[in-house]
Image (cartoon, rainbow, N blue to C red):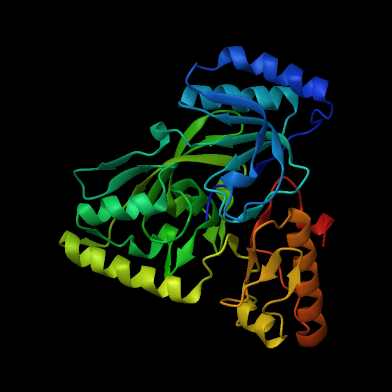
Length: 327
């Protein structure tokens, strides 16, 4: 899972000329270390490996540069889309009409134990690295995040969950930046969190979080639990490129079981295929396009609705667009 959200804007530039003007206006205000490009390919930045380019793309190296980007986008009426590890989204083939921002620089990947037993982590820290660093420090409680191909920011935005645990189970507070560029810190008790949902991060960007481990232990014991979770994931999830679970589980039901019961494992459109390992995954068999994936999503939904009477709701994000416009 990852930070992948759309910060609403209006009157987005549509022509190549207007995007060039926006780019030229913003670039002088950014530090030299911040990556800032036009027509940046996004497929290789996602786990599904499909889709087109971002009209403008940035990897800020500081809070100040992120503020410059957000405030400029607000002034110009440009949509801002946050990109984490790209593990729970599908990029359309025609790309993204907006500014895509990734906290990919090492400046956002901090891990700092505190004297009170908690640890401060940056939003750009990969969950795999968080778990490894926590294990070395003998911190118990983060092992369930091992194997989720995302970063801390995305896990906060989506309240990532696995193996019976949820991201906000271990959160004390979250530092974020509003769409106006203001920095705030919110205690977990004041935030509205649910299944794959954190309301305060819909229109804001997570910068960092303070996490509290359940307890402490020796590093080897923590590593053994992480390895056990890793083995379970490898046995139950496909290894081919995918965006993770495509559909949300309906109340008191399982999307994967419903799809499997409808005989859809192995169904294909082009190189997009319903996984034979887990029916709630669509995998890329090599050269799938986003159009292939979307058509397969439509076919799966229609089949499950016809046979089981259940409307499956996508869990992955259609990056830069709304599912209701394509389903």
